[in-house]
Length: 138
Image (cartoon, rainbow, N blue to C red; front, side):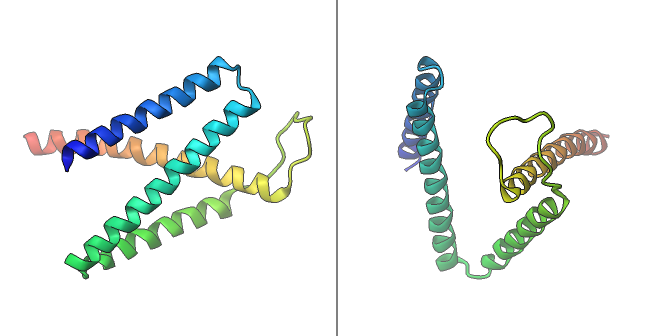
């Protein structure tokens, strides 16, 4: 089973690289951007199906583990909610393109806030791991 998963992952990486090369080779044409977006949608869909499949399999083997999954889901919802509340949704300074709705601005700022949170969490994890290794090593 591990070999199959390994080969599937290599195939997905190859398709992702091919789509990226196609986008750059066509100088970001509308068709290539659409292809990249459809590939991203397919990857998100595959991830959701994989997560749900794993969740169902885990529920059959260990139903009590669903509590920890629910805690993680609630934690993620809280983080997304905080990012949404903190998102100002103000228009970009100097933007002269087509008008953008307030909801789109709010969503974009929410995603930026989530990116900042992830960056901060990864930096804290790296520093925490260094400190933990130093403390545990002595």
